[in-house]
Each structure stands twice: as C-alpha cells, then as structure tokens.
Length: 397
Ligand SMILES: [Fe+2]
Image (tube, rainbow, N blue to C red; front, side):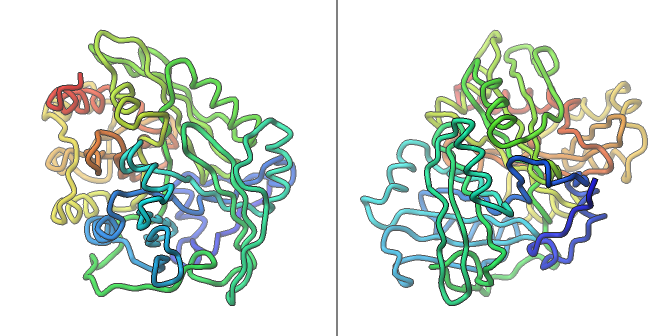
C-alpha cells in the first residue's frame, strides 16, 4: 500500500489527507498495479438552459466561488462556460450561445443536467489504451491543449446515456481551468465559510436491467472496485423499488453509485427520472461538508429547497436505538430534516435537495461522514417515501 498525495485542488483548499479520510472516505492504495489510475474528480460539468443565471445560483445558494470563464468575449462563440469552486470541488456550468450549439440540442433533449464527470488522471494515454482494449467508446483521442499557462493532456470516453468521462492530466498546467478559459471573479457576497469541501459521489440512473452492465464497465474498462451493494427489498417502499450498486476508484475519492428501477406497484423515482431526462444520466451529486447543520441553515436562507422528513422518522425508537450517539442532539437534526445512518464503521448525516432544475431530474445531497463509508442505506426507505410524496404532487407516481 502506498499513501495518497493531495491533489493541487485539495492543497489549494487547505485540506489534509486526514480530513479527506473523514470527509470522503479517502483510502491508501497502490496505483502501480491499477490498469486505469484515477486521482480524483476533475470537474462536474453541467449543461444549463441559462448558464449565466445558473452560475449565479451556485455562487449564491451553494456559496461557490467564480474563478474562470469562457464565452464569446474570449473567442468561444458556441457557448458560455463558468468555472466555480468550493474546496476541492469544481463545477463547470455550460450554456449554448449559438442556436446551432450542440449544447442547445443537449438541453432540449435532457433539460439541465450533467454532461461530463471529468476525471483527473496521471496518464491519459495509458487509460485510453486500456479502455480501448476493453471495448470502450473513445469520444476524444488523447491530445495536448496549450496556452501561455502550460499544457493539458486530455481525452474522453463515453459512459451511460449521453454522459462522458473526460480524462485530464493537468500536471503541466498552471492556468485557471483549461486553455481558452480566462480568470473571472465576482463581487457577490458569499457565506463566511465555504458550504462544502469536496464532491463525495455522483449517482447514475440507468435503464431497467442495465445496472450490472455498467458495473461491469466500471470494473473492466476503468478498474473501479465494487463498494457496497443494495438489492431489492433493501430499498423498496410500498410503491416502488430500485436496485443500486456502488463502484469506486482505487483511492475512493471517486464513487459512482448506479441505480436501476425495479418492478414495484407504481412508477419508481428512477422511471420518472429516465422519462424526463429522456435517457440514462446523472441523478445526484453528493457534496461533502464537515458542518451539515451550518451548511443546511445557510443554504435554506439562500433559497435552496430540501426534501422534508416526517417527524415520525426521528421519533422511531428503533431508529434512535440504531443510530446511537451522534455529534448533535437528534432535535437539531429533526428541525432541519437531516437524516442519520450508522454502519459498522461509524455514522453519516445526509440531506437531499429537491430537483434543482425545471425537470424532476438532477438534485444534490449534502453529506457529513463520521467514519461511515456507506451511502445512507438505512435511510433509503425514508428518502424514497419523501421523493414519492413529491412525485405524487407532480402527477408522476
Ligand atoms: Fe447519495
């Protein structure tokens, strides 16, 4: 086992290896035997129907910092792209300017959503060579992109739906994001402290019967390992069911749960997602915080809407016994609707937003880990019942 190094983004955000072990479950691993070494998430790239306003939303409501921009003023006549940071997390919000832009088409088909889960890798060519041998669909061959700040080597492979993994080696690059982007800041007032430090996991929804295919894709093509497995009854409510498996890269910085609908009495939330996204796609992004109470309070004050949790969840004696002692009184969690789950390694606190766009598709999770490397399996039922109440209100259950 070799120890993991901090990424430049993490160093920049003044994170430490110990804090990352707590925040996102980072583990030591030996990269030399990995056929497709991945260091970390590089960026989550969102397509938006109005990137100019979405960039404002993520700054205001999520407390992110605007750091970079590309658009007509910088010679990019196709689209605008805003680069936002919070801790080691990087979001890029893209919106079409040219009516003929492929992003305009993408948005018409899928609405607001995630187009790219970009990964930072130490050796783009080695990853692509392995991926190609394993039959991956290579969307972009390895190539260099340079400007006065250095050179980025990049390539891309396809994953579920119209989602891609761009692979980026930025070790020889000093610029703000990628060549073509300029530094950009804003004067918007932000919360005193950042509201999240890192991306914890990104969940994909795939069609019925295809989850195992995608698990196999991540195992075989990208060398990811299986983490936890939830099947059938684990996550069935009275009406709907789903199956979920989780794959992770060697150091566990990158974790991708994959869901597929299972047959239930009514239409599952995964079916609703697939209908409205029009394809497989990214369902939610979990962002890691070390103070979920403060983050939730601040985000609510800034207009973010979270799913509500019924009081009965907190009054359930079985749940209280199972979760045991957590760092704050249960009443404080109840006041905010924060969920708790415990497993053999520790516990976690989590809460989910409502979908952030017009379609009932992409949403966010806030997660505060205390030893647990799970995903809130014990909360799936309560969560899904909360989602179903909203699904019913939308007329989609
Ligand atoms: Fe999650």
